[in-house]
Image (cartoon, rainbow over the protein chains, first blue to last red):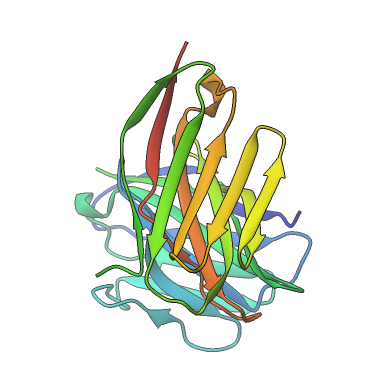
Length: 117
Length: 112
């Protein structure tokens, strides 16, 4: 199967600073990647759809100026949490779709646990 | 109404039991159905996928899709403590660029 690598796996930052999370497709090209946030014991919440070479599409309620997404190449998308606050502490996961003959299959990164202190 | 409904659980069963996990959905256009398993503090991993209606079996796991009822199931036979995880159903339209819609996930615990 396809491999999606996410880095870092965990990060602790001070309130007010910015944190960048990388999502790479290692053995395939991904024109579209997705960024999710997951709070403890809750499901994945889609934050935005990252499109290579164009602006990301954000879900309702997600601040685009706070969660900056850059998808500059077919194998890398980055999520930057700007001016992080403790309420931004969460598990962030990216995924990329692989087109199959009969639909699409999503492969996920390992996730990044962000703690803002 | 959510597009995909899934009982969050938690569901606790003894080791060796048969587990049944289910999801319902509202969009009849969904064609591609998946089950993901997520261990604590890890990204989800694909467990099973099924196209359109029918059954698919892989070892101890069986996925069923009933499009007429808009209902999908995942059965786990001879459940093991290592099966303890959150299981998410997911589905997409029949399109190479489709966004995948996830259920809320069911937390499963297998008691030794």
